[in-house]
Length: 118
Length: 113
Image 1 (tube, helix red, strand yellow):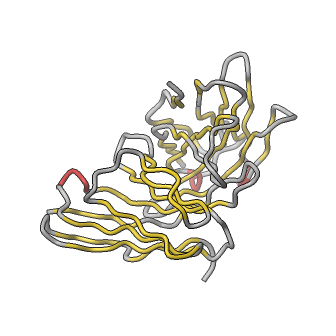
Image 2 (tube, chains in turn orange, yellow):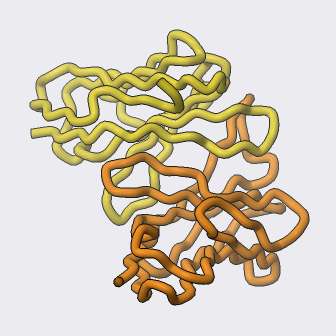
C-alpha cells in the first residue's frame, strides 16, 4: 500500500539550533513530494515541493528538504529554528500517474509537532 | 477575499440535525477537495471534485453528502451524524494539469453531541 510515514510525533529543538523533521514514503514509481505546515486554528500552508531535478529543495520561511531516492526519504530541515516555527508539519506524496481528471491527490502523513523553545 | 474560505469556522450539532459546510475558493482552480482531520491520524481525503464532477469518494458514509455547484464553491451537507464524526473539516483547491500544490482553507471545527 502507498503510504507516508512521519516517525516522530513531536520534535523539540532550542531556538537557533538546526531542526530536522523526518519523512519516509512508500509508493510505486517516482513520487512528487510536499511539505505543509499547520499553525493552530489554521488550515495547511504549502512550504515546498519536489518534482524532479536537484535533490535539495528550498521553500518558504527558510525551510528546505532533501529528496533521497535510495532511502525513500524527504526530510524537512532548517539551519536555525525560530520560536515562530512551532507548528504541526505534514509530509505528503503524490505518486506519479496517481490522479483522476484534473486533480492532484495527495497521501498525507500523520504530522509532526515541532516545538521550538526560546 | 483571497485564497480559500470556509464557513462556519465552528459548528456544534446534535445527531439529528442537518447542517452544511461551505467552501469558496478565489484562486481560479479547477479541482476542490474535502478532508477530515482527526488527532494523531493522517488527513483523510473524503471527496474530490474536478471540473465540478465528483471523481473520488473514499468510502465516506452517506450521512456526508457533497455538492459542487460551480468551480468556486463546494458544500458538505451533514445529516444524522455520529459523535465520532467530530473533527476538523478542511477544504482545499488546486489547479490540475501539472503537479500543483493544494491550497487549504482554515477548516470548520465540527462537534457532534
